[in-house]
Image (tube, rainbow, N blue to C red):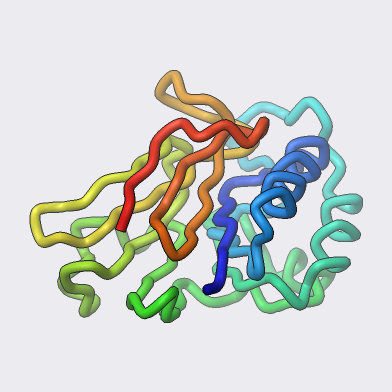
Length: 184
């Protein structure tokens, strides 16, 4: 089966992206799902401790064959010009281990849209944007995942990401410690 690392809201922090990629490697991730906000820190965030967008470009381009991505509200056309993989889509739909999975940044679609966009019991809705990790099954049986942010966590959470494999979904901190998980 295929394993996916889900990362969102990098906001230009090279050190934390390296840690997230190490977590992905430790979990033998076949693909890296990025839910937007790659390079720019954004007007409502401070400057990350290790702000190095050009190094982020180098890191991401070195694993471009593994990346499936959507655009965040802080991503621009200039960003897509230096990244060697597409980031311009507002959303994407995948099949992950036999489940329909909708991925978006979260500024246009949120979990309340899950049924409207054609998801049903057992499918996965993924978004970032809020910087608050969420992992739950909603009342319709749809798995809702927000991996949080690897740079600017909010709501008292740790810097986090997620891993999806044949057994379920786990939220992990950047030390690869499982914070929460749901088994399929």
